[in-house]
Image (cartoon, rainbow, N blue to C red; front, side, top):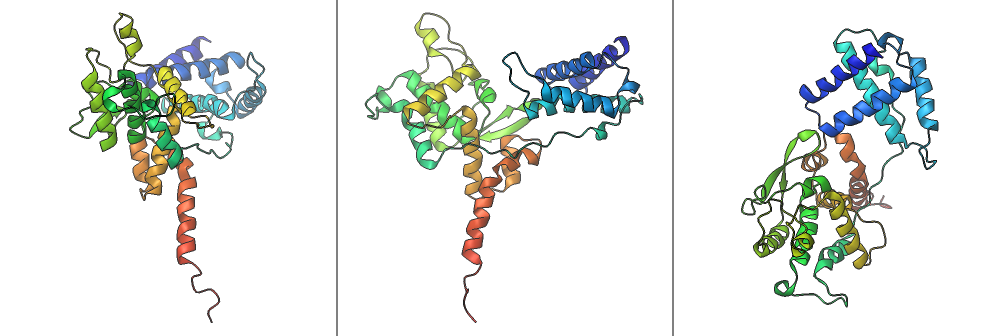
Length: 316
């Protein structure tokens, strides 16, 4: 596919340089596009028709992985989004091809989010400071790992950070006196995140106990204890830590770092924040993504309805 391969390479360079897309995004688009062109036997741009795309959608829908599992609808849509973006790029270059707007995405079932109830959140946050018998340990007597984990849980809930953003934090980046700092999220977009007094308290306790010089905010102290240099926790390590404390707190549903992000957004909305502000604090590029939290605003609407409607029912 000499011509198509060259165009794909040009498109990926365009994404990287002009659109400033992340390395991961460029790799994903590369994979999705080459899968399409391999399946379609390397058609020229002008030969990409709506019928061909329909056949491809059927193939995606029936495709099974090595474990016999079908492809998720959102993954199928990612393939189509990549193809649509490529066609849009061709249109900008006045290369004849299928109009990108003719490719419609599969309708997705409405998403629901899992978040922690107030009592569950309280138990989770306290879990690192408890003995196996359930007794609370004084901050002066707890280990540095317990301090790290409490500070990490408080930071996740306080800031709404993604787990990858949390794992990438450095000590220099987080100035506890400012009560806020900047992170770069998806698409390398900067946003300001905030720290509660509770999160700042536990971060200070943890950092004051640190004796290493590692730049990362959260490190693996197990490595340092074994005579090796400490290193920043990976997102997978953070996930395992959160899951272990959720079990210790007696929470039966599956809890991940992203559950704390959902809980952060839910807490804001329940306390009166508008959805546009929550969108900004979460770093969502589209309000549509933030609207998965409408279960909260719907509940608030019900409360308003019950409070203000029909109070004089039965009166003449």
